[in-house]
Image (cartoon, rainbow, N blue to C red):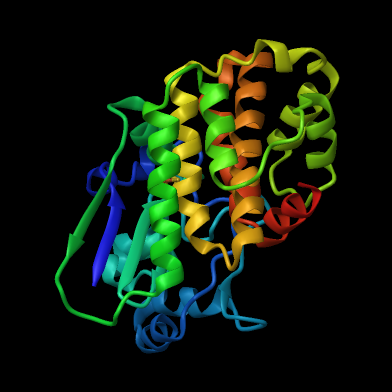
Length: 300
Ligand code: SF4
C-alpha cells in the first residue's frame, strides 16, 4: 500500500483549549456504530449523560446546545468525554478530525482539513510543503486511472512551483496542460454567487457581502506572487484532484481549486486583517459540503 501525506502531516497536534474556532462548535457530530456500542456499556453519571445527549435518528448524533456547542465541551474548551473516559472513548469523527483520507486500491492519501486553524498555520506558517510517499509493497494493485491523476497532479505541481514567469501565467500553463482554462475572475460576482450557497457561519456571509460590495476592481490587485497562494492552490489540488471520476471532472475540479484560491486571495485584499480566517472559512463552508462543491463545479 502506498501512503501519501503532506510533509507537515505528522506535526499536527490539536490546540484543544487554545483553539479559537473549535470544531466542537457548530458541526453535527455523528456517532459511529462501534462507539455507540461502547457508549451503551459506560456506567456512572457520565455514561447516562452521554446516552441522554445522543439523538438516534437519522444517524446517532450528539444533540448540540442552542449556541451550537457540543454538550461535552466544557467552559475551558476541553472535552468531558476525554477527561472522564479517555481518548479511546471518542467517536471516529472526533478522533480523526481534521484528518481526511482519499482511499483507492493500493493507495491511500491522507491530509489535514483547512477548516482547522492549526492546519492553516501548518500549511502557511513554515516551509512550503512536499508530498511524502511510503510504500510497504503490499496490498492491491494500483488503479490505473488514479495513477494517471497522481501523475497529472505532479505535472501541475511542477508548473505551479517551478514554471517560469509570474504565478498567474503558471496557473494558465497548468490549466492548459489539463486542456482547460479559467473564465475571467470577477470577485464581486463570485461573492454574490457564493452567497447563494448553503452556509453555516454568519462570519462567512459577512465576508462575502463585504467582498461583493467592495470587490469592484480587486481582480487587478490580486497579490498572486505572494507564495501563500501557490501553497493554497497546490493543497487544494492535493485534496480534490485525485477524486476526479473522468477527464471532464478533472477540468471541473481544477477550475474549482483555482476559484477557491482566487476567492481567498480577493477576500485577503479587501480585508487583510483576517487572512488566515478567509482560508479556514472557505474550507469549512465549501470544501466540507459536497453539495456546495458540486454547485460551484456546475457554474464553472
Ligand atoms: S479546529 Fe483543529 S485545533 Fe481546533 S479543536 Fe478542532 S482539531 Fe483542534
